Length: 340
Ligand SMILES: *[C@@H]1O[C@H](CO)[C@@H](O)[C@H](O)[C@H]1NC(C)=O
Ligand SMILES: *[C@@H]1O[C@H](CO)[C@@H](O)[C@H](O)[C@H]1NC(C)=O
Ligand SMILES: *[C@@H]1O[C@H](CO)[C@@H](O)[C@H](O)[C@H]1NC(C)=O
Ligand SMILES: *[C@@H]1O[C@H](CO)[C@@H](O)[C@H](O)[C@H]1NC(C)=O
Ligand SMILES: *[C@@H]1O[C@H](CO)[C@@H](O)[C@H](O)[C@H]1NC(C)=O
Image (cartoon, rainbow, N blue to C red; front, side, top):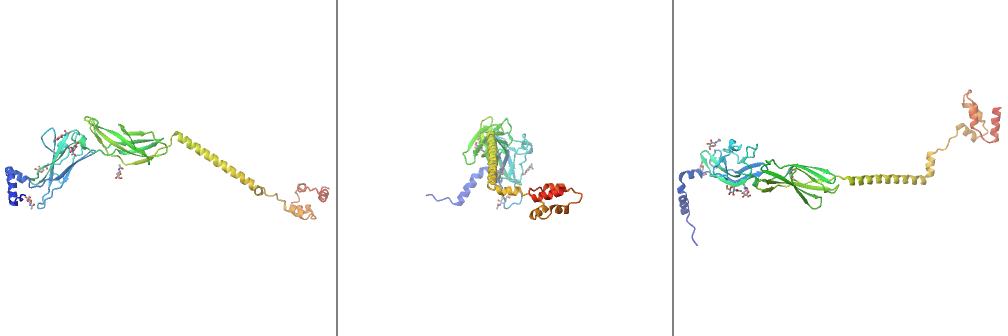
């Protein structure tokens, strides 16, 4: 086993290796470079970010500079408002957001782009750090379709949504898929669809279905495609179709009919059972005028006098008398005497 080289020798070796690059390389390497640069490509968002450089003995602010290059060329360009619509030449933030705000201010989505970033403090600069090359259409992460709007139909669901983001139709198009399942059932996938409106029409009426939609970004020229994320699960109940509606109406009608029948039957039964009682309630016995009742209790009392007591002299006694036409002889006598 070889003994490790003494530290002094190692240092001399390192310094010797650098000798050729001399003065400018030394001043450049004094500032540490930003670490872990990453390109974030999500829907329309395009952001380059990195970890900050911190200097313990320098109070001056650290700024960062970002540049881009196309694979077809060798020239690096600054991120300036003129070139790309954003200024990332001397920024203090640790990210450069180059999300296009207008179609003219973007890298063409099919171009092979490389990015690099470095830190600067005063005259000091760090080395450049590069991020892997990317083509927007190849590397973008496609989010779920947005504003998913579902209208339950008769044994169907109509799904409408908007695309995850806007893309020039000349460079790429979206295709859509819908994952759906009856609650507790197995999942099915329908697609691809070009339209932002999908109709699932082989569903059972009055059942709850859950669904998710996803987009696929298809790069027109290369036929490369990126599958997007699924939207959140949402569940809906299908409406009744014509036959189930008819069934419902028939069931309700039959139900009402049976109910009425049962009520009628119950009434009939009650009437039969409590016949006497009902008769008693509905036909109260005719009441006899008080004087006549008294007279009937005590027939010796002269009825006409009893009646005359109450009626005025002008009143015709005939009527009162004619009402009380009893067959008994006793009263016929009374009647006779009155007529005479
Ligand atoms: C302090 O900062 C200077 C550059 O401003 C650098 O050359 C030097 O190495 C730093 N010292 C330490 C201890 O970090
Ligand atoms: C993009 O450019 C890099 C070099 O900058 C190259 O290695 C890579 O293969 C290119 N990618 C495509 C798809 O052309
Ligand atoms: C950025 O900072 C450098 C010095 O580090 C300076 O020379 C240059 O003019 C600045 N550019 C802008 C656009 O501020
Ligand atoms: C873009 O995708 C290619 C492979 O398709 C990969 O090699 C490259 O590193 C990706 N670029 C970024 C920035 O992730
Ligand atoms: C999807 O669900 C997650 C958490 O469940 C929520 O944070 C997110 O906002 C939802 N997305 C939409 C588009 O509703």
